[in-house]
Image (cartoon, rainbow, N blue to C red):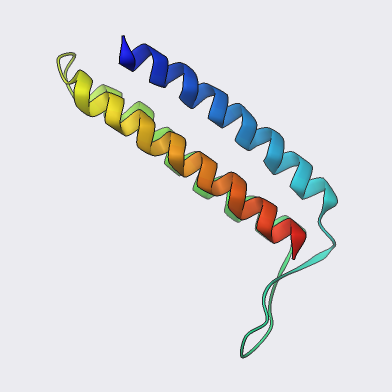
Length: 102
């Protein structure tokens, strides 16, 4: 039961992440400043897009890998892992919002 609920919540968090990702990408300037501490760290908008897309794809593809690796009886671990990736998606949403505000 909990596994099905967490699967639905993971899909919702993934949809929210993709919506936020495309919205932030559309609002970014051509050169995105990530840090200004000792030296300025800048990325082009396209480089940031592809780096972020790779991280999001790897994190969410790990769900499919875990469901194929572990047997059908490991419901507790699968539920925990769906929750972990769901929280990672929320972290990515907040991170993208901070980058767009900066």
